Image 1 (tube, one colour):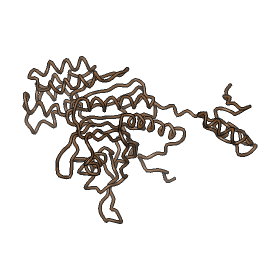
Image 2 (cartoon, rainbow, N blue to C red):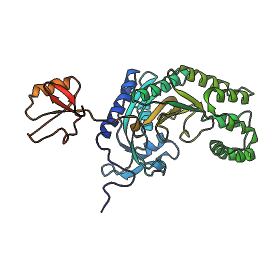
Image 3 (cartoon, rainbow, N blue to C red):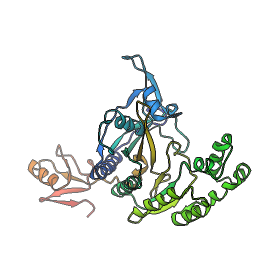
Image 4 (tube, helix red, strand yellow):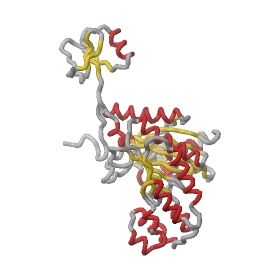
Length: 367
């Protein structure tokens, strides 16, 4: 038989689709409550324009095709952040800064990895454009944590990183041959002490400067004898202190995977029960049409990774055939999902009901 769907694509069936929609709505409600207004860019754009926003190599993940109308190459977005950056820089370029935008939509990649086989998923997030400061970063991290809690996630953990750490050190107290910097970043990310010792042994302490936030920050301060990282470390401490609630904080200063385009701050979001991170965020720059760059901070959540946090449980009240319509209306007004029997042979089981309307009230079927 011909497969129903291409590799990397799948249907989301009930009740999981409802659960995914509820997660998305809760995240966006939190964003809206903090002043983030929703923007909804199109699924496809001109490939050259989108590529310039995605920066070097970003378009290699995009599905491209020729538009029969314009005869120009279009690309389906592999990431929504670049489109939000375009909106902030162009359509909302006149808007007072900072601009707070939130979004939710489907993204699609040309290829998938073995660890993440899906080629299409829902991306939800917030971007704060026009300000690079500790309060801005603290707000973004705080909104991300609050959104995850609202989505029903537990066991929250935020793992911080310093994406430009190696560049900062290599340009200052710990010079490295320019041809070796990329390899050094890669080996530090992989925690390959042997390779780091061969390339630049002075960087070896950074491998140990990872783990629980407070201890890792102390080790980094001890490593930073010249104070080159002092402002970044002070900023990290302030952001961590701004987080309230039961959130585990860790620090991995040389983590680079997924943070290739962030500037001084990056963070990954983890929740209990999820096999991988459920989101990422950090600071970056937005490119304007005149070549000027503008600072921004944001985060993205991956809805599918959060679905394990949503129960997806049905709670449906069966209204037997012949029940007055006003009875169903009253139960819906009280918060119930009602399913009406449409003939005398209809049953609660056939309609996947959990409750039955009897004598003007809802009774659980397992009572």
